[in-house]
View 1 (cartoon, rainbow, N blue to C red):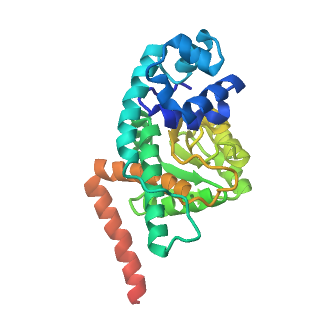
View 2: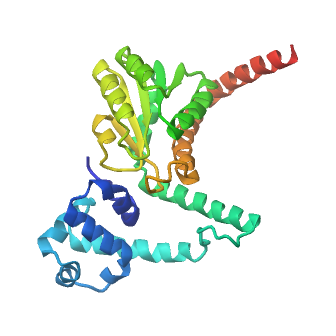
View 3: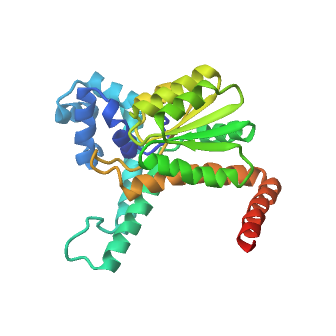
Length: 290
């Protein structure tokens, strides 16, 4: 999979981390710790600092989508200058025992702002446009997710159903496999996995793809296994450890990507979407009154 050079470099390195070689991980870790060190350095100085060959570092730059060192260095310098201005306004997001409820609320707000910005940096908007086009002509839509991603799938089901989609959200692996096996051309399935390594979702997308459906993956990891079985890959922000499956950042970024898709569809078919949304509202109100 080609890496989109328009993504922010530091966010891309974080998202690629799990798929990098041992040497590439070492390079990425050192740059992430001290990115300013590249500003005034030559290629030979950078290679010496990282204890790698010049050719190795050039290959690393190309892994990130750049032609070579000069291209990479210039773009990183621009990004760092912009990032410095942004970070001056960011609150420390570490929750302390002495924090009151207002301080915690502000820190959570800062986390949400940061992960949404990271998601926008990682998204390939040309791929997003293609996903919207596929959904606009889809006969059926399926959303697959397990654990907290399954809850995200259910939330998205509610939104898409309100604008007329024949949609289902599935979080049981056996049901996923059965649905996937019965799919056909004209169906679209979105698999949600932050790590990109959920075996259930990977297998279900693979079965759906073989059956003729279009497959979309929403994940944080740029080269994770789920990306190999998806026709389209959309990346959400918020790198997290294995102990943070309940992270508000992860949930928000997944919902953000799905809401972005939903909003673009509504924008493209506004009168139709409004009419269908009103029909669903009316029928619910009728049931409440009766």
